Image (tube, rainbow, N blue to C red):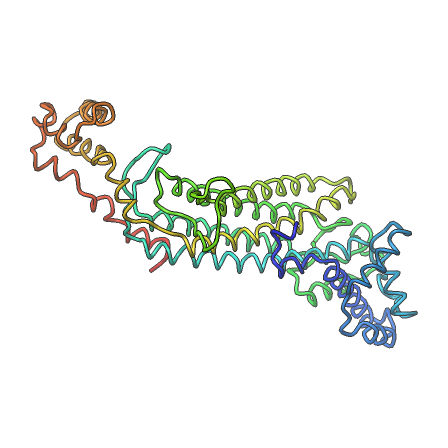
Length: 438
């Protein structure tokens, strides 16, 4: 992922330096398990531990491994060659009975686990921000829209309450997917433990803090696990896009009910000094497209030939870092946007009243039905008066009171009773309790 969208902590997880350190941990933990089983001399392990005590891979070490790889054309062999250079003769015990994927897949599981933990913390920030703003605007009236057209009143807080519920679902899905993908393997060439004791694998998984081993691995961990993880990231991106799109609509000049923060010194256009564009939410919409693409690539990685091939390898080298880095950036950008979102209750009220109470057409319809009028006949009566508001600019309530069919059934007071904003909001608190639990 390009530096523009890379936050330091997530970026570090995918650095070559960090990846090689995890590879080393896998090798050393496997070697230690073999010592306990009497398969490797304890003195050799002690020498390796001393050689690599607190060892940090830096640019020079990475460059050396890459130099070796240019000759051997194999990343894990290049890495093991480097360890032999530094660790000397005892390094011959490293990778004993193992295959490359034992290192690669187990290390990748560690990276996904740690990336998932950062993303879950990001979601906690998002949920906290959305929850606070929802409570702040719990009873701030706003017109609800369907098809982009005024429907019936809701509140801005209730809109955000729905967002909060969506993030709760995404958090639950990501937590599960992170658990599913936090699985490694140390079972040898095709997963049969032909040259390994299964206790070695169990020890490595436990020491690295993974969820466990792949119970019936081939030469690799099953890639449906990874597909589930990337699908969870994509679903979070889809929710981001849905909510960012709503902010974009609310910020339109004709609507302007809410607006992204516009900071001191910020400029919106190189040509038009008046512009305040929804660049944050538009950026989030774009990043969501990437996340969906990464999920498709992960799904295509599931079908490998026989016990393995490496068609997935090149894909994962790209989508592993890029997807987690992109979502990490996007979630934090979204959280900051919500924390500082400008909300305009007065403008919401103006737009709410733009049609002169037309949003209460449904209440009039129900009032007529309750008085015994057939529903479709009542619908025609209300609709013809509603259409006059659009086409003749007449007052809706006045039109109803002047309609002979309506007046035969409803008194003026009964018509007036249909135009009560609080009626639409009377269950808002109950919905909040259902979502927030308090």
